[in-house]
Image (cartoon, rainbow, N blue to C red; front, side):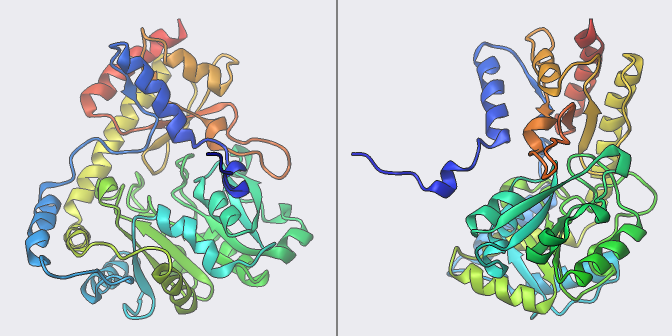
Length: 393
């Protein structure tokens, strides 16, 4: 039997994380222990109190049936309280918040709620692939704007062509930024809100890394600077090492939240109630988040110091769980990644050109850089730090 694959699916390239995983698997099958900095999946256990809350929830919600599409009122209230305490943003849990199955599901499906065929999405490159793939599946088109070191990895507002802005409906931003590790200043958020309002754009802010920052000043939320047309996507995956739980939330402009709620009822189901119970426990505790920040800082400093000892220039990230490193000695990012994967070194990193797509100006801003995800356990990070110098010999 033969059957066609949809054109929309065929237009998508391979998912970079899958490609890297296959390469690591090949080495491991040969008996090589690979220290994997490639995929941003925390390796340390989800904190015990969160696991216990999930376990208790299985019994508590034993006969609960299907969960609410929008999330339970209790969960949405806890989210509202957290947003108030963390960002001083007041949200109505009934109309301005909804639970999501992590942030990937929400980010990918979101354009279906607000785009019509031919509408455009403005998305950063390098950036999270669902920004562009979600738009493509919603029959929209994507204008990829480059994040460049000379612009401090912030958008150049003057670079967007007028004809693009005429068709655009969504502007994606994400700070602390994955993969560059840059935090945005307050002035950026004011400019972004004003720019989106001026051009009738929904400002979609992916804030999955908002709690992982290394400065004394916490990261900000776009909702601190505006509500009209602003929507925030949050996740507990990185904040609380809950990647496998698949839980997050969307919040902001009531009109947008209402539209996404309607969309969700036609696509999937709600977050399981016992998972929401674990998420509420996580949101009610900040100590484990502080400990995670300190842990990532120590890992960051180990790798950064190893780079310095090896004579490699790198800028320490201000936030996230990533180091965005320029490939040394004139190597391309793919060549550097392959050299690190030599069995004698066995370090996996993500080539930046795999994360970056060709921008609308024809460049690939990810080319020449590699991303280190600070996810291995501390002892493996220490081991990797010792191997970095040998990678250049």
